[in-house]
Length: 67
Length: 245
Image (cartoon, rainbow over all chains, first blue to last red; front, side, top):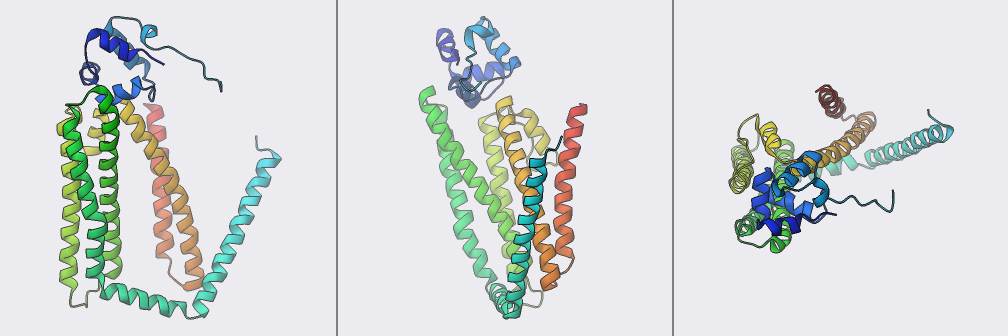
């Protein structure tokens, strides 16, 4: 689960612009927002830096019921 | 530690494999005894005499749909930039699917072209040069579509590097992909390796039985073996290389 979409809206940038800022494709940003792809620590830190927040403010760890 | 259950499973798989091998061998023997080889040579003769039509058929059922899907996907891709994020999620999946299917059809067309050319070409035939020219034109068309598709994707996403005509293309292209794209490529590559490993083993067994029962020769067995060897050796090499680096 993540609040990337909310953070993006706050900063007023779209997926393509965020993608350019962190050097990934628009599709990757879209996949992260939909929870289809979990970014690496490096990418999560890069994204957090753009929004000037901590990684935990964007990415929330939820324990899987199967764990 | 290998337990009794695992040993039993291995023995069971070997027995099942043996039974299937025996059934297949008996089937081939029966096929040989009932004049199946003569019927097979009739089919081969038919294919050789009609290879031009087979090439045309392949163009119609594979290459033309591939071009059509590419054009459709390209049009969708060109409109993606103007879409909102919500619309982009839906449309980008459709566009990607069209492009993926298009390039897969193009690759299947390439393989079948080589198979048809390799199995039906007859140096003594009157239409030898016609078939050769059709084959070369098809290869050019396949390469053109592939190169054009890569250049188009690179034009849309300037992060993606690599000249598709260069030998370094695969490395340069993968290096320029982002982590999510790399993950998809690596996952697909691993699945392809697993399928290829099983298929090559299957071919070794089939060609081995074919050589024993129908005298098909040792070459198919050697080629299947080399294919499997290259697969496993390259996988092993890259896994060791990656662990060291």
